[in-house]
Image (cartoon, rainbow, N blue to C red; front, side, top):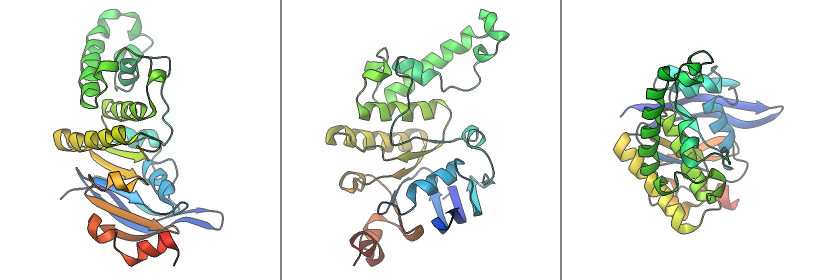
Length: 252
């Protein structure tokens, strides 16, 4: 199997706090992997370090074998890795379709000079619109394409953020609690959508999630952290019965 993300001996410090402490883990291409652990275990810090929001103090991060440890987030994004946040950040007044379209790369209409010549960008605009409709259909938001993004439910907003990541060309998506605060029916729909995207277009997902009753039905691999350290990684049935994980959660 191809490794999409490889983390090698990564540490991230905040003063004397070791938020991430010498973590090494690989995320296989086209997999659904969840990152679990008690609050304060370093999960979000690890995701932020992988995506370039934080720079590792020690160790390296690789994306499909390319060292991205010192790259800023926008360059890592251009290489095909996107992330979402626990609280969606959308253009509320724009439509669902427009929110998807703005994520597309290389639109000549974004150029000051070329934007004044309609013929230089109108074809690309049509292509982006068609691609956006297809992407919205894949995540189940096609019926809402003309609605303002602010009118969506919390779960639908998270689906729209996934659609924007795909419109930006992402092949690896880091998700921060995609079903937090989402009703159970839509939470199941979100994970079914992730499975569909993995199967049909080969997207790799690395997901922070606490609602394990739902997530464990769909994922391939579990990565567990506690106190900034990696304590277990592997198949769900093995990791979830690991005594180290049970101790981390129960403190016994």
